[in-house]
Length: 306
Image (cartoon, one colour):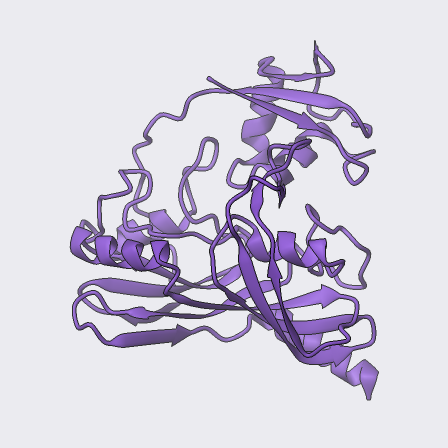
């Protein structure tokens, strides 16, 4: 049983408890969290509560989450947008809303379920039965390139590159505000927030985190950026951009600024992933086109600008 303490910030004030928790606990479904609340595994200010209760700034929610049990993960015939595949690796273009691997309350409709159907037993086992083939992940509402490994040989060598920060990872994002400079770097350590352990934050004793950014296009009130990760911390781009007062459009956790679009989560796309192929030793780079919703946003911004 893991105890998680969460202090509500101003951005959570007035929202339903189950809605807040579902947003912050990436990978856990709202229905699962509602069940936990009803069973008394969640308290608000020291008292048992209901899923629909409205929270206020400063409220303390404590979650006693049950220990995860390895699920019998079903293979599901979920269509995959495969960008590249061979006997060692498979690169897929993950859509918005898809969770990468199963978690308590969300054991279906994940990328792992889809990979198990497509690849069968041809996935690495290093990360256990809950995460077969998975070497890294991207957030549920982030789109773009993700690589999975089909055997332990490939997994080990790709993981070594991740640890050495030698993999090319370039993201496209739309942020609030305008930049005076054309490019820059955010070098600030990231760790668990002191006030909300379900969020990441810049903290003095956090892990080193470096994001290089370049302006791709400017719009009134918004900027399109290319962000190259030197490190790969949880929510790195989202935290770093918010720290320099340019939160991602649609990011309800780290920014939550108003915008004219109906979005589900942050406008962030993993566009390019490059690595040394574990078998051939040659550099392999795979790209994914911007999703349609992103293209539509940019087209409207350009039309408004002209």
